[in-house]
Length: 380
Image (tube, rainbow, N blue to C red; front, top):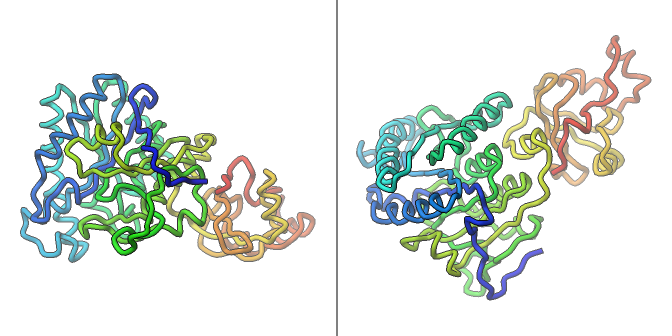
């Protein structure tokens, strides 16, 4: 389902990709001393301006606020020594980051917008729809949104932790055609190329399976960013399941998008058939309120497109209420589906493994036939 031959990656021409999300990592945007690499950023914006003029709609997800703020505040460990330091650095650095983006885009005749989001903003259905509506309006107005995680208020419980997955979720919300992750690596390799000289570049991935995920190295190459190859593959799962291609390519050239169009290395994860809007949102979520373990019969039924019935449940974990998102776990311990639960945790535990005829007596009330209806579920 993948290849690593010598053919160049096809790139994302403006003619075939109407809406593109570009993610830029801290290691590219900020030098080791914490100063912004202004000449490099100017080159990226020239690439963006060229595509913008050709009619392509661009959304930018930009890291760098914590690194910039840490330099201005003289904070140790790049501002990541503590949560308080990271939040303070983000508050100061975000102003500087926005100033550079807005000024350089204005030089190209482009209006910049800003959106700061937390994980909760995209995990909560109504706020997700609000963000999607804002992006749609900005696109119609020919604005280039510059998006970052709101690290000044985000905590461990409500943060993405890396902008790779944020970029994929933004692509999902904006119904983008493709995502380009500009990084200090030039794609996915069969092994870590820094430690294994026999590692080969994987140029095309048609399906993300266990073989692909096993290639990931969770470490960031520079030590400045928060994401590694594992986060990029997680982002690819989100983007491709929503019908968007995702590319990992080197951001080291002065004009990285142009370089890739001209044959520079990169890895493309190809889009899968898109699901419905609610199912895309469910598939892209990074959090859930609980876990429902099922037996082999229930697992087979789910894969055949049926609803989850209480009889197939073997174990219940978590604290949730009706309407919460829960994960469904197969017999091998892997996540197989996600959906909106019809019962709260106490009720689910009580009726797990039971037949419909027994459930009404156990609950003392009329019962809903499915624990999770197939219309409120997505297979993963």
